[in-house]
Image (cartoon, rainbow, N blue to C red; front, side, top):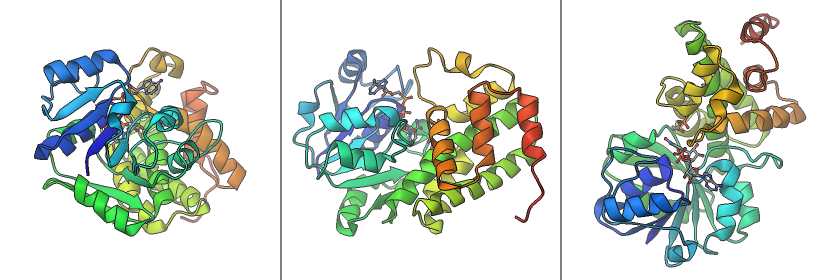
Length: 323
Ligand SMILES: NC(=O)C1=CN([C@@H]2O[C@H](COP(=O)(O)OP(=O)(O)OC[C@H]3O[C@@H](n4cnc5c(N)ncnc54)[C@H](O)[C@@H]3O)[C@@H](O)[C@H]2O)C=CC1
Ligand SMILES: O=C(CO)COP(=O)(O)O
């Protein structure tokens, strides 16, 4: 299966490096001409994945037509741009969606957006606890590969798997997507706790009460509980809520230290998906009658709608209830 990757940010570049690690050619579509040139001439991507020497088997391009011969396309754009890039991709080729988020304006998950943008292209989702720079360095990683077509899922998994990169197959596409989208918002909350010096008890409470929110929302959207408790849900939640290597956690840390969201988000080159997903998720949850108080709190801080102390007090003052 000749592989192509759409999007040369940190994660797209790391996945191209993974796929090229057995010497096979990988076509990598990048938005920025500077990135195309740096990868082809210098075998590096200093803009998004600095200090990682890239395989010469990776061929970057700015022309989507150069991906026409690919038999598998990994889509790794930011979630809010996925509709536009998928519409440009060659038709009929299996799309492995690696972006984590919910589309603003439609509240659609990435698989639903891709189905609208490229009807007829088979779809899979690749999602889990996977910091890009660790995968690019070949460190051990496990991930969920969700696909409703079991045979296709097995073929994709075989093509993507490496000695230190283990895809676990699932047929719960929606469940895999909801975990990845929701954990980004919850990572912002854990970053806030870190930045405000609330302690590790508070972080653990946010992770487990946040997981309860993820589960309520996921079940309401048709996800399976075991998917939400797996790599793409709980696994990714734990990773992203534990480290400033996470852009979402770092954004929250800045909020917790007292910075304004608008200042933290202006002029950033890399994406913190949780900031885009949070208000969409809050509205979708309200519409479904699902309570998500941690997500509501993150939205209030992102919108600068209430002082940090008031947001924390409101969460702690919620009525006592059974776990
Ligand atoms: N970085 C990571 O460790 C991981 C990231 N992801 C997900 O992968 C997706 C991409 O994230 P990263 O690769 O980290 O991105 P990044 O933050 O490293 O880079 C930003 C990306 O956005 C692209 N971009 C900017 N404006 C655009 C536009 N108008 N149209 C299309 N693309 C545009 C840039 O070309 C670049 O590829 C996100 O949904 C993220 O949640 C998933 C797993 C791990
Ligand atoms: O999704 C990720 C790891 O699985 C990356 O998290 P951040 O986008 O918060 O950096």
